[in-house]
Amino acid sequence: MATVQSLCVYCGSSSRVAESYRQAARQLGELLARQGIELVYGGGRIGLMGICADAALAAGGRVTGIIPRHLHDVEVGHHGLTRLLVTESMHERKRLMFEMSDAFLVLPGGLGTLDEAFEIITWRQLALHDKPIIVVDIEGYWQPFQALVQHVVDEGFARPTVLSLFKVVPSIEAAFTALELAREPAVTPAPGLV
Image (cartoon, rainbow, N blue to C red):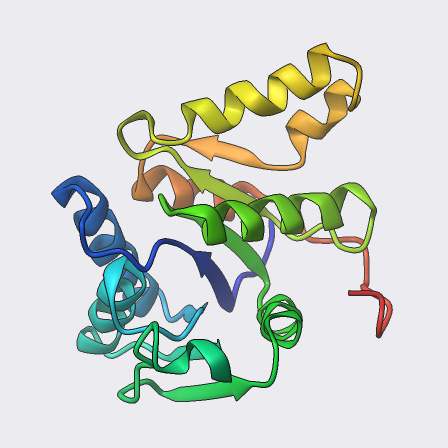
């Protein structure tokens, strides 16, 4: 069973989204705080990112935000966090989020969330890590994502084993169950590889 003390959450910064997505982000933040798991995320105070962070903070949780300088004003960096790290590049942001997290959880989001999800899954495929990756399929949001990955496999561009690199679950509760059942990572990332 994996010991998760810090969870990296990838999710959208848009505020123009369905209430079900907002509620999932809120519930995630509250549960992280209650279970004593630190939230590591992109550092914004708007959209699902801000909702999740605010919920964790309101419930007494620890929250680390990591945001590149060029997005600090665009995504409105959240200055009420336990700590906010401002990086010089997106690459540095992603590396720090990876290094500071024991597992990864993907909520609904846009192109940035897709980029982060595909990258962390690809890093696992390349054996750069084997930390748990949970995709939360709120109201079927990630079904096209799953279909695309299956299509990649069907067309011969990836082996069927890539489907086991991440776990898709239907709810926040199921995500926590999946994290509890995940095996302890066996791969220790070599410094500088990611």
